[in-house]
Picture 1 (cartoon, one colour):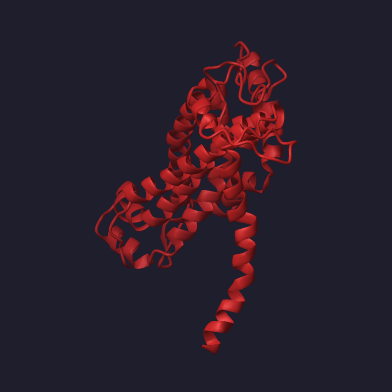
Picture 2 (cartoon, rainbow, N blue to C red; picture 1 turned 180 degrees about the horizontal axis):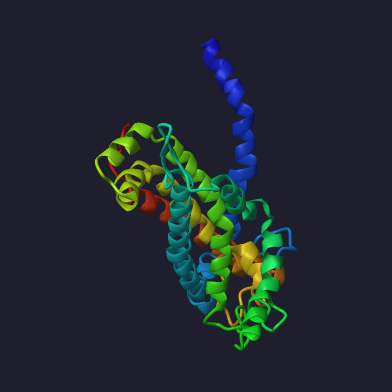
Length: 301
């Protein structure tokens, strides 16, 4: 009994802090979503589900969902594929030396290069790529195109290219972290398994798809869920890079930018909270579905 009392007392403060700073804001958001609160009055006027009805009838909400769908498919797929390829090259593609698997020549230097974008603040990355994507010849990419005799491209002003340009930045920034994550997972795989596969005549491609990837599956699953949750955010880069916070003409808008604009631009906190509730359930549903669909029998080694 004394032991249980000690444990309960030890956990009381963390649980209390979690309830106040995490659970309470969620409950408040659910409550405000049922009101027409504009952020200035002390009282709350309940309007039932009016905010949700307006949300489902708003084209900006559906445009944000379509953009999230594109982000959910492309960003995790591109990031995980590149990170797996680079992690394999850095840790196992160099063959066996002294009984251990090694990466390609210069792998230590490449690890630093790949991880470098991860130490930059998101706002800094956004400002850097605004210079890279400038629509005239002063931009890094367009300057090179003009020197080669081409025409400048509106990377962030063309509706067909704006979202893909931002996705490319998201992938560029995220790949370094997942290279480190997958490298740590590969380091935990016993070297005997690689040696046995090599003795059986497995080439690099067969080694990757038949040995490395199955044994790394749980790490890949976690990475995919993290990236999916990041795809439901995207606020900082979209806010810094896009025209008019989600433009042009809503081509890059996401739910987080719609929440920000409605809450702090139009003082529609009730409607913004309804968008926040929708984002909460979408994120929760994605994480649960991904864990369910990608579940496989655990390989013990």
